Image (cartoon, rainbow, N blue to C red; front, side):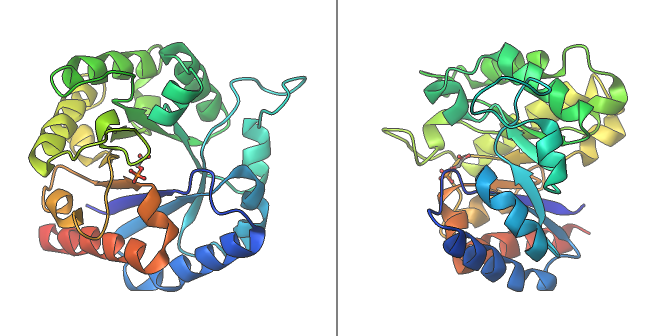
Length: 259
Ligand code: PGA
């Protein structure tokens, strides 16, 4: 199965020139691994139109979409506008959106519906909520999952990409601490079992379910070695192209082993 690595640049870098250099440097090496690993890069909105010209191996994702179609919604970006910038994917339900911007399960759900309406593939993060603890992860992930898929048809659920994103293991969160590969694999299996109730079990086995806590060169093998983990959503470490490539390479290597 192909692995998938998603770069979430968050609100970085600060200039178009830096964004262009980072994107080109990341793309540059990707032809070596693109047969068994897909890469999606999610920069800030403002850089998307420029970066479409440089995207040959990587696809472009956004970090948010408005739940509204168009109109008087100051500061929002619509699904149509993303499509016009060649965006194929959109990250939704990220813990930073949930915690810093107060996005609720209902907001996330409305955005998922809007993304699907515009044929954008939602990359849905599960596990981000203030005060979430290790013990409460399964019920929290289940609650957020059920809200995300509510009312969707089987073929729509089959297109979703889920991410297990334990809030305590994100670099941006105060007092963050590490997640183990074993526990991440367990939660990812849990998400796949939830999926199997809504799509064919065989299909659920092949749907990408990623790990979204901090991944870097030093810990990537802990996660990549678990076949249940289809790839990673990488924040901070995606801002430096050679380190990011090491992460892609590690998943790519595991994917070749498992073929
Ligand atoms: P990080 O972010 O890699 O910087 O910890 C991960 C994420 O935001 O999902």
